[in-house]
Length: 216
Image 1 (cartoon, rainbow, N blue to C red):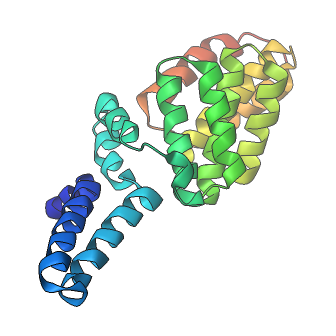
Image 2 (cartoon, one colour):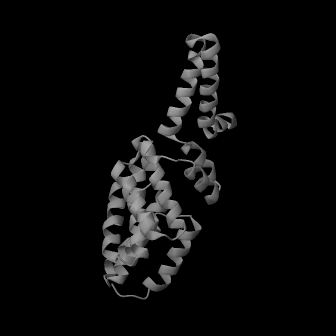
């Protein structure tokens, strides 16, 4: 696995080296002895631009290494050349990084680009709409947030933790709208999922202190 990751990381440079060696072999021994080198060079260079080093990001994201993930994304010089599913994931991850830096406008624009290209998995599409809803919440655009989060729930989210978080955001939106019965209904849905993520559990505790005192 580590060797494969190294090949992906240095695939472009490997391709250029193979091309240079191929040219030298071509000059001194002819085309056919150099053919395999040319083919290897073409394979390395083309796959670098079509697929990029996206596989390398997974480990950084799992370890919470934002700087490492950004470094891998910065190594993609021409995202427009990536095949559509990979380009969609590229913009999705770029949006996540922008959101981490609280650059909400940039995060929103990148996520819309990702959705326009089509998400590789249905759950990813739901997560993308949920993120757009979260961004709209941060910008106090509750009407837009509600539209996005409803669509995220309807499309489907990756797991119960994300679904519970979406219900809690809907609860907050309806509290803001002073539609307390609907707010309580969304709160119950979130609680019934029994989420375990500390952030979501803490949010449930905070809302519960308030919601138990409101009518409806």
